[in-house]
Each structure stands twice: as C-alpha cells, then as structure tokens.
Length: 191
Image (tube, rainbow, N blue to C red; front, side, top):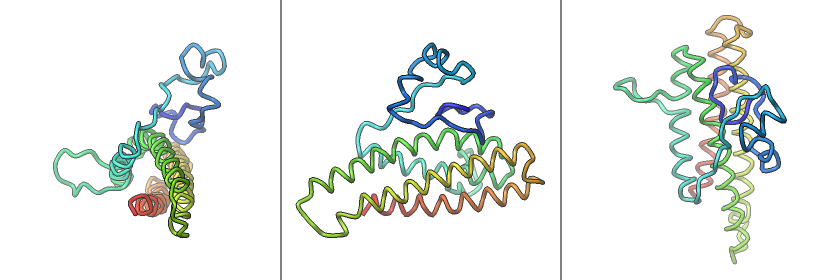
C-alpha cells in the first residue's frame, strides 16, 4: 500500500490510501504514520486548491498533463498518454501517481462548489439542478478509469500483460476512456 501522492515507482499499480478527512489523522506526520502503518512511506497530505477558480485552472493543466500531445518538438514535458505511446511505462506510471491525487482534490473542490451554487440558486431549471450531479458522475468515472490505468501500468511493468505492446494497447484503451470522462467533466464545469 502507498499514500496518495507518493510518486515512488513501487507505488505504480498498488493500493493507495484514499484522500479522506477520516484517515488524515493517521497519516498527518511521519511519526503518526509509523505508529499505525510502519511499512508505508510517508508523503505530505495532498492539499486542495484554495478556490473554485484555482481548481478549474488546475483541472485544465492536469488534463493536458494526462492526455495532451505536445506535437513532438522541443523540450516540452510529455503527457501520460505520450509516455505510454513511447513505451516509457514506468515514467507514465510516476506521472499518473502525481496527477491522480491532484485530480481527486481539484474535483472535490469543483463539485462542492457546484452543489453550493445549486443550493444558492433561485432558479429551478432542471439543467441547473442536475449540473453538480452530472459533474460528480463523470468525476467518479474518471477516477475509476485512472485507477484502472494505474493497475494496468503496474501489471505491464511487471510483465503480467505479456509483451510491452499488449500492455500499451490495454493502457491506451483505458486512457482513452478516462480522457472521455475528463472531457465531459470539464465541459460540464465550464457550462
């Protein structure tokens, strides 16, 4: 097991402690974690963005980091998708370990704000009332797909999916589905 936010290669494809207020008291410091789970590497708790606007901006950055194509030129950082395409599965896994906890906390800030807007709205239009719910469904599906990508990357790195090409194909298929959920989530947020 690993803490969310731990980008060690050994954390690719293994269980991550959820980012949860109920568990934070057990992992708030290296000493506390050592008392409850001495075999888990401590990393700082993933902190959410301070505002809705910051969360929306970061969501766009995370979407690029995960799925964008750089066009192949220059010294630009490659996305998870590009790393998988190039067969750099461990590096793709490390990048995914960095991105997924950020998407988790960013999404929570956005969804909480959407529900707050919904409850403060005097409008009773069904579209407005459903926006937060629709965003939450896409967000949950996105996190599920990213978790599947993480597991597949771990299996591919350990050779459990056969040759590297087979692992790449399976990972890319899950990434495609994750990208669709990310795009739909972003579309709903930006309405």
